[in-house]
Each structure stands twice: as C-alpha cells, then as structure tokens.
Image (tube, rainbow, N blue to C red; front, side):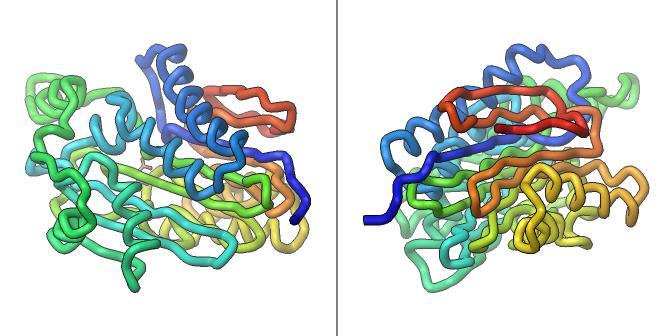
Length: 307
Ligand code: ASP
C-alpha cells in the first residue's frame, strides 16, 4: 500500500465585484462546499469525488452563478457549462450549453467516466443526461428569485444595471493517495448571447489537471481562454514553483497581456500545496489546511499562504 498523504482542497465562488452581497452568507456558501469535499477526503475518498461534491453544493446555492441561480442568457434561459478533470490520467469530461440538468458537473463526470468522449454540447448533452439516468428538469427550475429580479432590472431601461457580480464556481483537491482533480461549473456571463460558451468547460482554460497539479479558473472567459490560464498555472508548478507563486504568476501573466482581464484561479500542486490569485475586487474562497481546518477569505492578498 502507498503512503497516506494529508488531503487538501480549495473552492472558489467566482472572481468578480461582489459589491452589495452579505460576505458572511457568501463565505458560508464556500465554506459548506469545502466541508462537503473535505468530508470525502477525510474518509479516504478520491479527489474527483471531492471536487464533484463541493461543486454540487455551490450549484445548489442560489447566490452562485452555477446550477440553480445561474445567470440567464439574453433569451432569459439558463445555459450551463462545466468541466471535471482528473490529474492522474490527464483526462476530462466537459459539457456546454446544458439546459435540463441541475448539476452540470455531474453530467461532466458522466462524460468522463461513462462515455468514450470528452465533450458534449447543447441538446446532445441534455440527451446524454437522459441516457445516463440523470433527473431532467425544466430550464425555469434553474432560475432563482434573485436572478429573475436582476434579469428584470437589467432589461428595464429605467433602472440602473445591477452592480452585483457573482461568479462561476470551482474546486481543486488532492487526496490521500496524492491524486489531484479540478472542477468548474458556470451559468456563464449574464445576458450572454444564446450559444456563447466561455472558458469554463475548456480543458486548459477554465479547468485543467495533470500529474503536476489541478486548477479551476473564473472571470471573463473571452480573456481566460486565449491564454490557457489553468494550464499555465499548472505548468508553473511543473517547473518547480510553489502553488501560491504559480497561481500569482499565471494571473500576473494574463494581466500583462490584457488590461484588467477580470480573472482568477485556484490551484493545487502535485505536492498538495494550495494557491489562488485574482485580478478582481473579490473572489470568495475556502480551503482545507494541513491541520484539517477550513479557512475562508473574500479576497486573496499578494503574500497569502494557504498552509
Ligand atoms: N468564466 C465564466 C465564463 O466566461 C464566467 C465567470 O467565471 O464568471 O463563462
């Protein structure tokens, strides 16, 4: 039997403004997601199980832009994208433009483990959910009261656009056998054109994992996908940077290419170290430290360590 390692995990609730939100509620949301993932890891479960469980909690939470509570597109529909990535074998499952399931991350996991393919989109992805026996729901069941109110406000010329910015969710984990995994799930950007897909389901951009580490990104997908943000961060771990420095270096690089790219990421390296960085005003995170505690923060500082 191999050595038992100390598991680690980090989750994010989206890079953005987060002005006007109750921080305690937001941090409780990411905390509960981290706790769900940590419980699996403490019981000897896999990194893949942990990131899926943590992401499902955030998909169920109305405050986050994933699953229930996703932003609506310009047609007033929810279209979700998700990826789950397994570092041990450098493989992933992804879905985009999904409309009929509550947990896009679980459908992505189904793609990874129950098909011979990597990526399903639109109607075909929803059809796959049926074939895999997942519950099929009406699209409107994904619309939270808060998003419906915001959507109406955004489309009422007499009212100011909403100052609220919620984001994509994601998780990275390192399990007791040293395997890493990453998950990302999103409703995308608000009022996006129908059919628009961001970085979130793209392997290397919105989520990535290989033997060197695992990463999940958030922010403006059109910026993130041009520079493979997650792969860039994991590659930095692969050449010896610690995870906190690697996360900062990837985000700093993106910032140098695109002014104000509105992006962030979380990262776990192959040695189980954790990192996170963002260019936005906030990015709520929760992480499991080596002593088994869960910590939360609304934003990352330049010298933040995650031990
Ligand atoms: N990255 C997501 C997208 O572009 C949005 C977000 O992270 O807030 O669809």
